[in-house]
Amino acid sequence: MGVANEDWRVLLSLFPAGWEDLGRKTGAISRLRGFDSVADVLRTLLMHVGTGWSLRETAVRAKLAGVADVSDVTLLNRLRQSERWLRELCQQLWKETGVDLTPAIAGYPVRLVDGTVVKEPGKTGSQWRLHYSLRLPSLECEEFILTSAHGQGNGDRLARFHFRAGELILADAGYSNPPGVLAVHNSGAYLCLRLNPHTLPLFDRQGVPLQLPVLLRTLKGPEQPGEWPAWVKAGKQRIAGRVCAIRKSEDAIARALRRIELKVARGKGTMSPLRQEYARYVMVFTTLPAGTVSADEVLEGYRLRWQIELTFKRLKSIIQLGHIPKMDDQSSRSWLLGKLLVALLSQKLTRIGRSISPWGYVHISRTADAKQLA
Image (cartoon, rainbow, N blue to C red):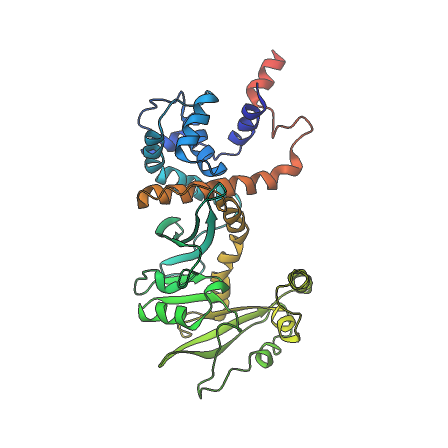
């Protein structure tokens, strides 16, 4: 058996229980046609999303490897049909890690927004900026937007998404700016984002700049959350919200300061006292009503974003190279979920890597054990 087939066997051992039946149940597998098994269907899809090959190149390589004999059009149709299958596989893998995708803030439909740059293969490969939002806990891709990676207005902006009244939006510090807060507020939705005080100036009730460092210093212990009313000025509007913050543990502070040192060494900013001060805290700006949602609930709800950050970092790394199916939204959503599945599988492989035996397998199957005993 070749190395590729041995590696595939190891990867198969990482899939959630019942993954083949799930493919049939979700409608991804109604007939094989061009594939010998359900495993070959998923293997071919992962070849496409995991390597960055185009649909045509994937079809050719799959045929040469004896995995599938299909055209690029057939493979695209398979990708479209597999959206629900891929999404439910991702949900199950996340559950295995102990991450509950249901936010701690009850009563609000939640969406997570993010973005990254995609570089397609080749010297002249196109660069795209991918903007997407996932609904939690279902992981349904609510929006999938492609823009050029360069040019004015193509950066990460909350204003490009369509929000519904009453839903809660989780966003990272890259979206921490007044226009973004305004876009969510005007749609009637609520916002919970990691605060970057440098890009999102905050003010008190009288319109005086909020003395955030002074307020943060009142948090003496690592388990003591605090909250303070804050307003955002966006054009002629003043948007009411609050800052919820908690001091990091001493170990987490040391790691955060070390990351800043490394960034400064690479020419990214300077080691200012204020930057060091902010690194000691986790700060979240939210427009959720204070009377119904406590600071504890806000921080715990946003903690979901931190829990899945490692997976999203891997997702962004994997996304960096790849041909995006730009034909329709369904194929694009399936492509994104396939990337997410690869990221989750790589995370699981890393997690169990320490327990892999010297012979290179995760475990010996019971069937093999029975044969040996016989």
